[in-house]
Length: 444
Image 1 (cartoon, rainbow, N blue to C red):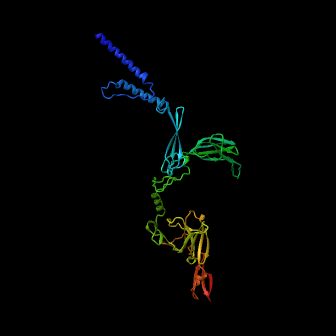
Image 2: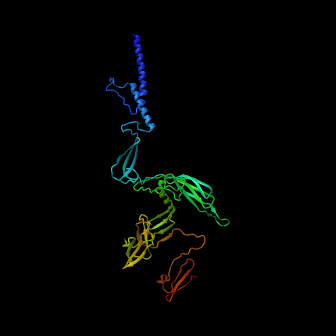
Image 3: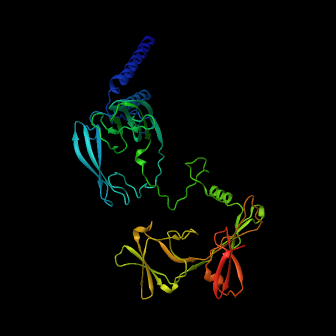
């Protein structure tokens, strides 16, 4: 009895080993679709998978996934899509507002072809195959230039310089010819040629991004040089980055290329105008609080009742006012920015006509730097300059110089009056009346 029980146990162990081997090599190793694990309806369900079967199925499923990754397929063999293991997707543009589409173009050789219709966004750029509600037109791309080649060598009549990516600029130091003695040398003619294939060349820089072959031709063989500069993002060249309505902060400038912050600008202006102040009538320079030099603001008289319109041609401004509003010394002035306190400047590109007491300035629109302009007729009156300290001169003598005319200085003079004037700052002249006739003679 004991011998029979022992034999049954040995046979059972052999069958278990064969069972494990069969499940791990013959059944699950070659599966083409994932194998489900059956756990039964309860813990005592005899139909449920044993623990060894569960592990073998898991091993088979993981192996199947590994094979799919290695073969870059979705499982291989026949599946629910009828044996299709690869897909090719192409996109096409649709008008803005239309619904997206997916079209099955058929299959061939186990490859399914689908076309996806992508509607253009409300403000999207055509041909971008993107769905968006705005364009990144103000996206700032960091793009730097770098020196790709800087070499001196002897030019043959045609030199292949090499192959470069995204060329930004090419600067040639041409062969120098002639000269000698006191005569300067001159640069020999040269040409810069680009190619996208290394065989056919053209003189214009092809659109970026690109990989280009560069060649330099020279009319004369000799010593010269070439400097090639490339750029990391050539597609950003010439972009305008509009940040209207947005705020951008930068660090204080440390070199000649950095933008200047408002604090830096205010400090620079304050240092440049240190000591210059204004009391409402006079600008005065007062270092350490002591007034040294003062300048009185010249009064400005403005013509009133100006009217502006576009003339019948549609290409000129017509600025009109009554001729009686002109004041001696008047100027016709223009500004394109009223925020500038001294923005109005003398403007002379006009024609002036008078009709029935109305003066009209005709100004060509092309003559103004913008499509708009502000005009005025103004007459600046004389200001004044005074010094708060006694002037000291190392050499020479200060002579006041004034402009005068005989009628002005003799007006109101009585017989016997003598006045001394000067007109050139060097010589004094005595003036008096004799029988109402002015007499002039050098001052003794």
